[in-house]
Length: 254
Image (cartoon, one colour):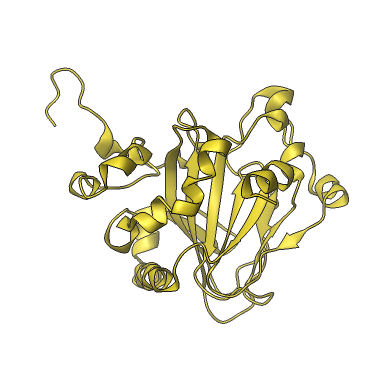
């Protein structure tokens, strides 16, 4: 079954081997360096829930690799799911600390558009890539495939979702990724291991969408002007939500 069909039907598609392992090792080392130094919490914190936190990452260093933000396999399917003018919405690290508790069940970036929300095509997709092996001990993400069709102006209870949809826990060896619709219900599970579990998140969205979870930060796409110039021109439209991509207003000095 195609990735597009899986997302339409289940709101979830597992993508093994999407990124080359040498690239993932570089990304893992950079995320852990920033985590262990305290830089992620100090400079990029978005939210902190049940012993796990999410931080915006800047597009610099290894994150400027086009195989990450413009992955060829994804580039073939994202226009069909999000329209031809889709954008990057954010680059984030999700760190589940040792001892992190179970997270509440939720959807990401909900829209309050009335009863028609569940019938819409996707407005945002999250690409999650664990930066380690994930097993039951270190806290896999639990998702409920198909539950994106239950999203509406009033979200159903966790009991209603778990009764209607099967749970899938995203365990696997280092190197797998999974793509999910922002409306798919999910939650983090407890990290009972002695180490943090790092997860890399790339969010792609329709050009009009703005993630309400990012209202407390200046932008979900953090890139300096000099690094934006390093992005190949054919990929630069992906970064149009970044402040560095904005043209100055009348009379404003750049």
